[in-house]
Image 1 (cartoon, rainbow, N blue to C red):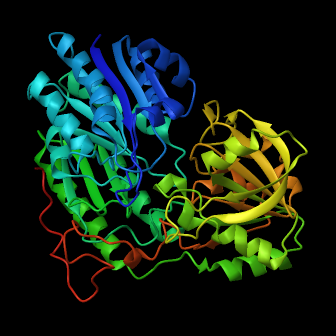
Image 2 (image 1 turned 90 degrees about the horizontal axis):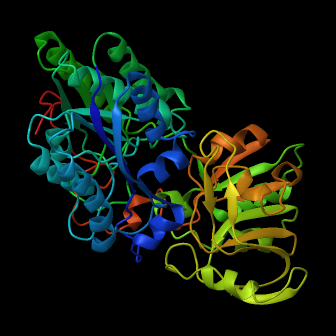
Length: 508
């Protein structure tokens, strides 16, 4: 049966503690494509849209694609940017309301605009107001979504990633589309149950590469194999000070089947309880800067030592310009090393006023907030490479997708090649170095700003991986961030409390 389906992608992870804002230019730098242009750019890559089309095209659906918009995590989304992008989606729904049979949206789940706490819930409410209560809406979410009651009220079908590093975007898009197809055909009447856990995030931030957390996703897949439409385990996002913060467990089920609802209730309770019970089982060991620098100085392995600056991860909305780790490596006398990226548009512009081979002295980094990761660092280095910053990924996450760091330079500071970029982006693909003349496998130490996504591309070439807490904005020490809006009590900000029994999943 042929259906008409409205599709869109609108994704941002908003760090409410950032001094900056995410405006339309940040979406334009990363991803902002409309209609058929978006389909051409994203249908042959690991994207939700590609997954939607993998189902829609063979089924003969008519796809009306409004927009694909994605910006690197950062501060709250401005009203202007939100209204522009959401407006495209809502206008497409309004213009085609009499022929739309269903909606497929690729969302993040942790978007916080300037004017409300729940960007995705607000968008879904706008769509419901245009389309009425009966049109099925399916959404995909990032594993780090903070899922509100409003979201599961207005989207009957919710499917989240089950991998971190995230490598299943296309797979999840296809799963959501298949469920939507059954709903449009009248085979099922889907609904979604939600259970919330009173924690900032899951103990290991949703890492699917370790047994303790992978077991949660394995249980979710098992429940899907037993008949539930989708079971999603969302680890939450610590960078947002909002009332819906925290892990959630979702189960989409056929509401016509009483046994399915009972199973959804049991599974969401079970997994939520496992998340709570595992709150003390944090497996990530964090080195401080001095310890990481000592490890780098002593490293003699045949393959690179990878130091992940967890706290300055632009992928969690950190500024990406912390100087603490660079200073520590320089003070220790580490050479044969790379540090990437150092997000400093002013420094990149200054370097671009010189030529490759020039020796330049400048104040590097530390402009975002010196209280998180250190202030500007005066360095002298040789410019090895000047570039417009464009690259095309070839790894598990970014394969086939073109991105840009903006004007970029490689500055060699006493044996440490610093990738100085204008735009924020975490390290998650080897082409983010190779495109700028740096062969990662030929370096002794790779200091990369990322929490977990770096593992998809960098761990296979690493001799060893260590995590560093440089004290930047995404530090795992949550007590350093001034939470004011989150519900209390909340682990680990509060420790001496018992959560409510996980026996009342909600669909509100």
